[in-house]
Length: 220
Image (cartoon, rainbow, N blue to C red; front, side, top):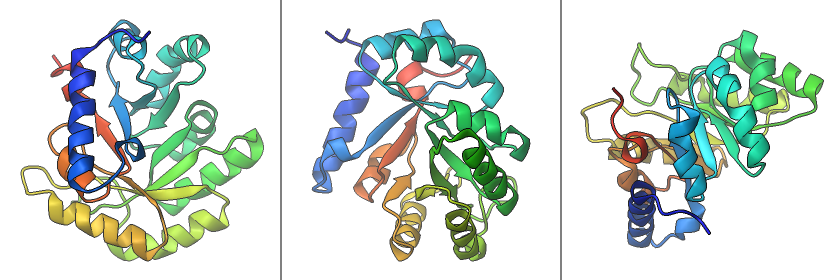
C-alpha cells in the first residue's frame, strides 16, 4: 500500500481538477517530481507514496543518487529537464528515460550517436525558447522546423515540445503557442507547466508537468 504524502495527494487533486475543466483524462498527464538538489532521503517519501516519474537537471547529480533508488524500484522513470551538454550525451542516454531539453543541432548529433552506440533510446522533447529570452535555453522559434527535421533524421524518438515561459507574465499565451507548434508538427507531447502554473498548462494541453516546490517545499 502506498504511504500517504499530503503534498503529492494535493498536487494530484489539482491535476485532476484542471483536467476535468478541459474535458481531459487526468491519467493523460504525467506528473514529474523535480528532485534536483534533493537528497535520497527527501525523495523516499514520494516513492513510498507511489510517485514514479522524477526530473533532474544535472547528469552528475543524478548519477550520484538514482542508481540505488532505481535498483530498488525498477519502475521509476528518470527525466532530464535541465540544459544538457553534448559531451554528457552518452551518460544521459544511459541514465535517463526521457530527455526534455534537446535544443540544438550539436546535441541532436551527440544524442543520436550515443543512442546508436548504447542501444538505448530515451524519448525526447525539443525545447523551444518560447519567450525568445536570451538567458534561456531552447531553440529559436524560427529554427524549430529544421531542428525537428535534424532530430528525426538522427533517429531520436521525438515525442513533443518543451518550454519554460517568461517569469512574472501570464503564461497561458505561451502555453497556447507551444501547443500550436506541436500540433503543426504532429507532436503529441507537451512538457509545460511548473508549480506556479501547472493547472493552466493542463487546461491548454500539457501532457507532462514538472513540479518541484509544490511537492518538496521551497529550497533553502
